[in-house]
Image (cartoon, rainbow, N blue to C red):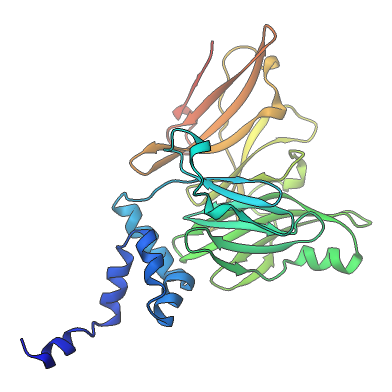
Length: 317
Protein backbone atom coordinates (compact mmCIF):
# COMPACT_ATOMS: atom_id res chain seq x y z
CA UNK A 1 0.00 0.00 0.00
CA UNK A 2 1.39 3.38 -0.97
CA UNK A 3 2.25 6.10 1.53
CA UNK A 4 -0.26 8.36 -0.15
CA UNK A 5 -3.08 5.85 0.32
CA UNK A 6 -2.15 5.29 3.97
CA UNK A 7 -2.25 9.02 4.58
CA UNK A 8 -5.64 9.25 2.92
CA UNK A 9 -7.11 6.43 5.06
CA UNK A 10 -6.11 8.16 8.29
CA UNK A 11 -8.81 10.79 7.75
CA UNK A 12 -12.08 9.09 8.56
CA UNK A 13 -15.36 10.94 8.12
CA UNK A 14 -16.51 12.50 11.39
CA UNK A 15 -19.74 10.49 11.44
CA UNK A 16 -17.67 7.27 11.45
CA UNK A 17 -15.50 8.59 14.29
CA UNK A 18 -18.60 9.50 16.29
CA UNK A 19 -20.04 6.00 15.77
CA UNK A 20 -16.79 4.45 16.99
CA UNK A 21 -16.59 6.70 20.04
CA UNK A 22 -20.23 5.96 20.92
CA UNK A 23 -19.33 2.29 21.31
CA UNK A 24 -16.49 2.82 23.76
CA UNK A 25 -16.81 2.21 27.52
CA UNK A 26 -16.81 5.39 29.60
CA UNK A 27 -13.25 5.16 30.99
CA UNK A 28 -11.39 4.98 27.63
CA UNK A 29 -13.88 7.46 26.20
CA UNK A 30 -12.88 10.04 28.81
CA UNK A 31 -9.20 9.45 28.01
CA UNK A 32 -9.86 10.14 24.32
CA UNK A 33 -11.38 13.52 25.21
CA UNK A 34 -7.81 14.86 25.42
CA UNK A 35 -7.01 14.00 21.79
CA UNK A 36 -8.25 17.35 20.45
CA UNK A 37 -10.49 20.27 21.29
CA UNK A 38 -13.15 18.88 18.96
CA UNK A 39 -13.13 15.48 20.65
CA UNK A 40 -13.20 17.11 24.08
CA UNK A 41 -16.21 19.22 23.11
CA UNK A 42 -17.96 16.20 21.59
CA UNK A 43 -17.36 13.75 24.46
CA UNK A 44 -17.67 16.10 27.42
CA UNK A 45 -20.15 18.78 26.36
CA UNK A 46 -22.34 17.54 23.48
CA UNK A 47 -25.77 16.44 24.87
CA UNK A 48 -26.69 14.59 21.65
CA UNK A 49 -23.50 12.53 21.83
CA UNK A 50 -24.18 11.75 25.49
CA UNK A 51 -27.71 10.59 24.65
CA UNK A 52 -26.47 8.46 21.72
CA UNK A 53 -23.78 6.89 23.92
CA UNK A 54 -26.32 6.13 26.65
CA UNK A 55 -28.90 4.67 24.24
CA UNK A 56 -26.34 2.40 22.57
CA UNK A 57 -25.05 1.16 25.94
CA UNK A 58 -28.65 0.58 27.03
CA UNK A 59 -29.49 -1.38 23.86
CA UNK A 60 -26.35 -3.49 24.26
CA UNK A 61 -27.06 -3.95 28.00
CA UNK A 62 -23.62 -2.66 28.98
CA UNK A 63 -24.84 0.06 31.34
CA UNK A 64 -23.54 0.04 34.89
CA UNK A 65 -25.73 1.22 37.75
CA UNK A 66 -24.40 3.54 40.41
CA UNK A 67 -25.85 4.53 43.76
CA UNK A 68 -25.65 8.27 44.43
CA UNK A 69 -25.30 9.35 48.05
CA UNK A 70 -25.71 13.03 48.88
CA UNK A 71 -24.38 14.65 52.03
CA UNK A 72 -24.35 18.36 52.82
CA UNK A 73 -21.11 19.07 50.99
CA UNK A 74 -20.36 15.93 49.00
CA UNK A 75 -21.74 13.61 46.33
CA UNK A 76 -20.53 10.02 46.21
CA UNK A 77 -21.20 7.37 43.58
CA UNK A 78 -21.04 3.77 44.75
CA UNK A 79 -21.12 0.53 42.78
CA UNK A 80 -23.99 -1.63 44.12
CA UNK A 81 -22.12 -4.74 42.95
CA UNK A 82 -19.30 -4.02 45.41
CA UNK A 83 -19.56 -6.41 48.40
CA UNK A 84 -18.91 -3.58 50.84
CA UNK A 85 -19.41 0.14 50.34
CA UNK A 86 -16.40 0.68 52.59
CA UNK A 87 -14.19 -1.06 50.01
CA UNK A 88 -15.26 1.28 47.23
CA UNK A 89 -13.35 4.54 47.27
CA UNK A 90 -13.82 5.31 43.56
CA UNK A 91 -16.73 7.58 44.39
CA UNK A 92 -16.71 10.38 41.85
CA UNK A 93 -13.31 11.21 43.32
CA UNK A 94 -15.36 12.12 46.39
CA UNK A 95 -16.46 15.37 44.78
CA UNK A 96 -16.63 17.98 47.53
CA UNK A 97 -18.46 21.27 47.16
CA UNK A 98 -17.62 24.48 48.99
CA UNK A 99 -21.25 25.07 49.89
CA UNK A 100 -24.33 23.07 50.84
CA UNK A 101 -25.39 20.77 47.98
CA UNK A 102 -28.75 19.07 47.42
CA UNK A 103 -29.49 16.20 45.02
CA UNK A 104 -32.80 16.92 43.24
CA UNK A 105 -33.08 14.22 40.56
CA UNK A 106 -31.30 11.95 38.09
CA UNK A 107 -31.95 10.42 34.68
CA UNK A 108 -29.83 8.57 32.08
CA UNK A 109 -26.60 9.32 33.92
CA UNK A 110 -27.37 13.03 34.41
CA UNK A 111 -27.81 14.51 37.88
CA UNK A 112 -29.83 17.59 38.85
CA UNK A 113 -28.19 19.37 41.80
CA UNK A 114 -28.70 22.54 43.80
CA UNK A 115 -25.44 24.08 44.99
CA UNK A 116 -25.65 26.52 47.90
CA UNK A 117 -29.25 25.43 48.32
CA UNK A 118 -29.41 26.15 52.05
CA UNK A 119 -29.68 29.94 51.70
CA UNK A 120 -29.65 30.49 47.94
CA UNK A 121 -30.19 28.32 44.88
CA UNK A 122 -27.67 27.65 42.10
CA UNK A 123 -29.01 24.87 39.87
CA UNK A 124 -26.94 22.64 37.58
CA UNK A 125 -27.16 19.56 35.40
CA UNK A 126 -24.13 17.42 36.07
CA UNK A 127 -22.67 14.34 34.37
CA UNK A 128 -20.71 12.41 37.02
CA UNK A 129 -18.98 10.25 34.38
CA UNK A 130 -17.54 13.12 32.33
CA UNK A 131 -17.48 15.67 35.20
CA UNK A 132 -19.25 18.14 32.88
CA UNK A 133 -21.48 20.65 34.65
CA UNK A 134 -24.08 22.82 32.96
CA UNK A 135 -25.24 25.76 35.02
CA UNK A 136 -28.94 26.50 34.60
CA UNK A 137 -30.62 29.90 34.48
CA UNK A 138 -32.51 30.89 37.62
CA UNK A 139 -36.14 29.77 37.74
CA UNK A 140 -38.76 32.42 38.38
CA UNK A 141 -39.26 31.57 42.07
CA UNK A 142 -35.57 32.29 42.80
CA UNK A 143 -35.88 35.77 41.29
CA UNK A 144 -39.00 36.44 43.38
CA UNK A 145 -37.32 35.26 46.59
CA UNK A 146 -34.19 37.32 45.90
CA UNK A 147 -36.23 40.44 45.10
CA UNK A 148 -38.31 40.13 48.26
CA UNK A 149 -35.29 38.99 50.32
CA UNK A 150 -37.10 35.99 51.74
CA UNK A 151 -36.33 32.30 52.02
CA UNK A 152 -37.47 29.71 49.47
CA UNK A 153 -37.36 25.92 49.37
CA UNK A 154 -38.35 22.96 47.22
CA UNK A 155 -41.32 20.70 47.88
CA UNK A 156 -41.10 18.32 44.90
CA UNK A 157 -38.43 18.01 42.21
CA UNK A 158 -37.48 15.65 39.41
CA UNK A 159 -35.55 15.16 36.17
CA UNK A 160 -36.70 13.09 33.19
CA UNK A 161 -36.31 12.53 29.47
CA UNK A 162 -39.05 13.01 26.84
CA UNK A 163 -38.28 10.81 23.84
CA UNK A 164 -40.80 12.40 21.45
CA UNK A 165 -39.01 15.77 21.62
CA UNK A 166 -35.51 14.50 22.53
CA UNK A 167 -35.57 16.78 25.55
CA UNK A 168 -34.54 16.55 29.19
CA UNK A 169 -37.05 18.26 31.45
CA UNK A 170 -36.82 19.36 35.08
CA UNK A 171 -39.89 19.79 37.28
CA UNK A 172 -39.81 21.90 40.43
CA UNK A 173 -42.52 22.71 42.93
CA UNK A 174 -41.25 25.38 45.32
CA UNK A 175 -42.36 27.65 48.14
CA UNK A 176 -41.45 31.32 48.62
CA UNK A 177 -41.92 32.45 52.22
CA UNK A 178 -43.20 35.91 51.38
CA UNK A 179 -46.31 37.67 52.63
CA UNK A 180 -48.60 36.32 51.33
CA UNK A 181 -47.06 32.86 50.99
CA UNK A 182 -46.39 31.88 47.34
CA UNK A 183 -46.14 28.53 45.56
CA UNK A 184 -44.48 28.03 42.17
CA UNK A 185 -44.44 25.14 39.72
CA UNK A 186 -41.94 25.42 36.89
CA UNK A 187 -40.56 23.29 34.05
CA UNK A 188 -37.08 23.58 32.55
CA UNK A 189 -36.44 22.43 28.97
CA UNK A 190 -32.85 21.44 28.25
CA UNK A 191 -33.46 21.82 24.52
CA UNK A 192 -34.79 25.38 24.90
CA UNK A 193 -32.53 26.23 27.87
CA UNK A 194 -35.38 28.07 29.56
CA UNK A 195 -37.88 27.83 32.41
CA UNK A 196 -41.62 28.35 32.23
CA UNK A 197 -44.29 28.48 34.90
CA UNK A 198 -47.02 25.91 34.44
CA UNK A 199 -50.70 25.85 35.21
CA UNK A 200 -52.13 22.65 36.65
CA UNK A 201 -54.08 20.57 34.15
CA UNK A 202 -55.54 17.10 34.37
CA UNK A 203 -55.97 16.97 38.15
CA UNK A 204 -56.80 18.89 41.29
CA UNK A 205 -54.17 21.50 42.19
CA UNK A 206 -51.24 19.84 43.99
CA UNK A 207 -51.61 22.33 46.84
CA UNK A 208 -54.59 20.24 47.93
CA UNK A 209 -52.16 17.44 48.76
CA UNK A 210 -50.24 17.03 51.99
CA UNK A 211 -46.53 16.83 51.25
CA UNK A 212 -43.61 15.36 53.19
CA UNK A 213 -41.56 17.58 55.50
CA UNK A 214 -38.49 17.30 53.26
CA UNK A 215 -37.89 17.74 49.54
CA UNK A 216 -39.46 14.82 47.68
CA UNK A 217 -37.63 13.51 44.61
CA UNK A 218 -39.91 12.16 41.90
CA UNK A 219 -39.61 8.48 41.01
CA UNK A 220 -39.15 8.39 37.22
CA UNK A 221 -40.75 5.76 34.99
CA UNK A 222 -42.85 5.87 31.80
CA UNK A 223 -41.64 9.46 31.25
CA UNK A 224 -43.51 10.60 34.36
CA UNK A 225 -42.44 11.60 37.86
CA UNK A 226 -44.23 10.03 40.83
CA UNK A 227 -44.67 11.06 44.47
CA UNK A 228 -46.59 9.70 47.43
CA UNK A 229 -49.25 12.16 48.60
CA UNK A 230 -52.46 12.25 50.57
CA UNK A 231 -55.18 14.84 50.31
CA UNK A 232 -55.32 17.47 53.02
CA UNK A 233 -57.81 16.37 55.66
CA UNK A 234 -57.82 12.77 54.44
CA UNK A 235 -55.73 9.75 55.41
CA UNK A 236 -56.28 7.91 52.13
CA UNK A 237 -52.92 7.90 50.29
CA UNK A 238 -52.40 8.25 46.56
CA UNK A 239 -49.60 8.31 44.01
CA UNK A 240 -49.46 11.61 42.17
CA UNK A 241 -47.80 11.46 38.75
CA UNK A 242 -46.63 14.31 36.53
CA UNK A 243 -46.44 13.50 32.81
CA UNK A 244 -43.37 15.31 31.47
CA UNK A 245 -44.53 15.21 27.84
CA UNK A 246 -48.11 16.39 28.44
CA UNK A 247 -47.11 18.53 31.45
CA UNK A 248 -50.15 17.48 33.46
CA UNK A 249 -50.91 15.63 36.70
CA UNK A 250 -52.76 12.36 37.14
CA UNK A 251 -53.35 9.76 39.83
CA UNK A 252 -51.89 6.26 39.65
CA UNK A 253 -53.81 3.39 41.31
CA UNK A 254 -52.65 2.68 44.86
CA UNK A 255 -52.49 -0.86 46.27
CA UNK A 256 -55.15 -2.18 48.62
CA UNK A 257 -53.17 -3.27 51.65
CA UNK A 258 -53.72 -6.53 53.48
CA UNK A 259 -54.70 -6.48 57.14
CA UNK A 260 -55.45 -3.49 59.34
CA UNK A 261 -54.60 -0.14 57.76
CA UNK A 262 -54.33 1.44 61.22
CA UNK A 263 -50.89 -0.12 61.76
CA UNK A 264 -49.47 1.69 58.70
CA UNK A 265 -47.30 4.75 59.35
CA UNK A 266 -48.34 7.19 56.59
CA UNK A 267 -45.28 9.35 57.35
CA UNK A 268 -42.99 6.47 56.35
CA UNK A 269 -44.47 5.72 52.93
CA UNK A 270 -42.38 6.07 49.80
CA UNK A 271 -42.54 5.63 46.03
CA UNK A 272 -39.54 4.21 44.19
CA UNK A 273 -38.66 2.67 40.84
CA UNK A 274 -37.11 -0.80 40.96
CA UNK A 275 -35.42 -2.87 38.27
CA UNK A 276 -36.93 -6.17 37.13
CA UNK A 277 -33.91 -7.07 35.03
CA UNK A 278 -33.43 -6.93 31.25
CA UNK A 279 -33.80 -3.15 31.38
CA UNK A 280 -37.37 -3.29 32.73
CA UNK A 281 -38.46 -1.00 35.54
CA UNK A 282 -41.59 -0.86 37.64
CA UNK A 283 -43.14 1.38 40.25
CA UNK A 284 -42.80 0.27 43.87
CA UNK A 285 -44.51 1.48 47.05
CA UNK A 286 -42.84 0.92 50.42
CA UNK A 287 -44.82 1.07 53.65
CA UNK A 288 -43.87 0.69 57.30
CA UNK A 289 -46.11 -1.27 59.65
CA UNK A 290 -45.91 -1.62 63.41
CA UNK A 291 -47.18 -4.80 65.02
CA UNK A 292 -46.47 -6.08 68.49
CA UNK A 293 -44.00 -3.27 69.11
CA UNK A 294 -41.92 -4.24 66.03
CA UNK A 295 -41.54 -2.19 62.84
CA UNK A 296 -41.24 -3.93 59.48
CA UNK A 297 -41.52 -2.93 55.84
CA UNK A 298 -43.63 -4.10 52.93
CA UNK A 299 -42.88 -3.48 49.27
CA UNK A 300 -45.72 -3.43 46.75
CA UNK A 301 -44.67 -3.67 43.10
CA UNK A 302 -46.80 -2.55 40.15
CA UNK A 303 -46.14 -5.26 37.56
CA UNK A 304 -48.09 -3.45 34.84
CA UNK A 305 -47.96 0.34 34.88
CA UNK A 306 -51.30 1.97 35.68
CA UNK A 307 -53.12 -1.32 36.25
CA UNK A 308 -54.35 -1.84 39.79
CA UNK A 309 -54.68 -5.60 39.24
CA UNK A 310 -50.95 -5.79 38.63
CA UNK A 311 -50.01 -4.96 42.20
CA UNK A 312 -48.20 -7.43 44.42
CA UNK A 313 -46.28 -7.23 47.66
CA UNK A 314 -43.52 -8.77 49.69
CA UNK A 315 -42.67 -8.42 53.34
CA UNK A 316 -42.76 -10.00 56.77
CA UNK A 317 -45.93 -11.59 58.07
